[in-house]
Length: 367
Image (cartoon, rainbow, N blue to C red):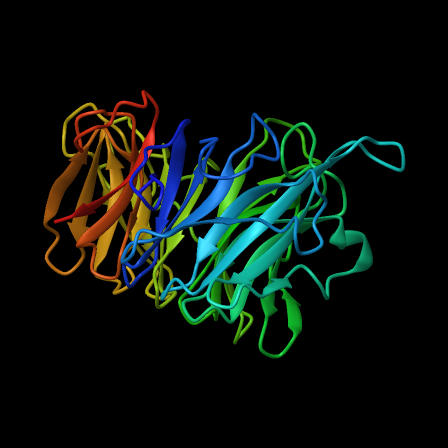
């Protein structure tokens, strides 16, 4: 996928492929200097590949109001690949406030080229940073992070919040509400219809080491539930959010906690799925003993879960429980609607003929 329209390989590394549910569009990041102009020599640029005709398009907001020196941050594709949400990131030197990274969130209509700013309708002080967009299947809703302080040296310097923007109605809604001792929301993911959002909550202002928990909020009812609920004992606060199912009923995450389900004795990081409405949690371990299972991405039909299986990528059929390893030496796997096509990143040079650029690339598996 990370080649020019006429098939020339990238003169630089490419990674983090995202595949639309219909399998026709792949978004990815690249430092290849022959793909398009680089705003920064050490920053990735965002590209979109049309799988049907090979067309490669660079996407940024420097032509839509973002600073000329900005680069493109996190991104998210709609189900049909027609809309792409992304963050435009730049630096402020501290001469008029805190030093660090600031950002805006945009949605680009890939057909018309129209670009719309997303992080609007938030309190004025929370318009300083907009990051980490997650777009609904139809492209109407976008969940994103907002912060009142520049991010430096790590993201989430202030009391970050999760908001959802309804692009059709022009309304922005706050989603994350802090439990006691928590001050930062991170990594929001939104369900297919935009009604449910899952996110991490990080603690602050307490004694002891930092910790995090996972929450899910139904925007229609206002119900918020903790996701990484222990089966017994105390909460380990060591979970990382991965994905939310299309219907919003299940949340995938990884953790090294061993008390979320009975008989977790492998002393490894595993993938878990919380069916939060049913209040049930199940575990997905690596298929090879001694390895870790991480990540977790649902297919758009809600019937498959992709996860990092040691050094491989495996797919679990959620109807039958069957697990099949589909890729080796791969990461950042992103499936289409039924997980028959998977975009992924690999540094292997023997996957396709003529791979001689000695850099990581983005590929598309058809299985």
